[in-house]
Image (tube, rainbow, N blue to C red; front, side, top):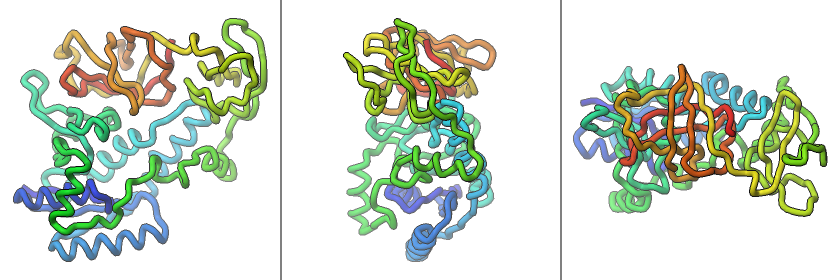
Length: 349
């Protein structure tokens, strides 16, 4: 079987490429240029040299315009609308398993990446996305918006591996990835400072709402002015800049009135949320009675009752949770780590 392997130059994608080659697959390397610049030129030269030594064909595709249109622009517009988007989930849906997947099919029957996830046969669900074995690196949350029919044509060599073991495996073979360091959280944001990046977009016509009232929940009175709703997110405590007799948290943002609602910690927990842009991985009729939901990446899935209404998920947590930010992903799991559905959070209550 011929497999096209997406390579970024990092440890994980290099392992995916080499491990599949060792297993006897016919492999072709595919690198996508999502961004351009001098650093990318240097990386490309290193990857060409590496693939040349290994006798593996390397194809390079320029997807920078698609990346700008499907990831960078929606990221900026979502912040302007007082949402906290998840660019990695958008990129996986539109780019890695969208445009890049389409190109990969030109050279192979399957597509492989260095994601820490698995596609596994389930007796009821069929071939379904499952969380990776390395809980610290599992990326199933970021793939929850990718259509299942695309994932079923993919291979994920890192499914049962841990990062430390992968480094040892590569070292034993004398292999050093062109980019040995971990990538930054958002690839197109310099120094992970998305506030500065958004400010710079003003010159390109991005309209970011300005200052507005800060409403104290419970007392229903204005106690300060905020700097712009795009500079806050639900659950935030640090950086509010509001002197008060007790610590205050951002409870919610109201873009229709440009209002930031704050309150003490005891007002922070919510019991439900609503998610749209629904992506069903498993038919709801097959879902188990007990479901778990993850509404942020750095969180273990928590018990919740999920009901579907047209193209939305109503998620009722079995115990109060920190408020999820609109724009983030809600991923539904079963007890064994299989992903049942994904959606984009719209609001919480």
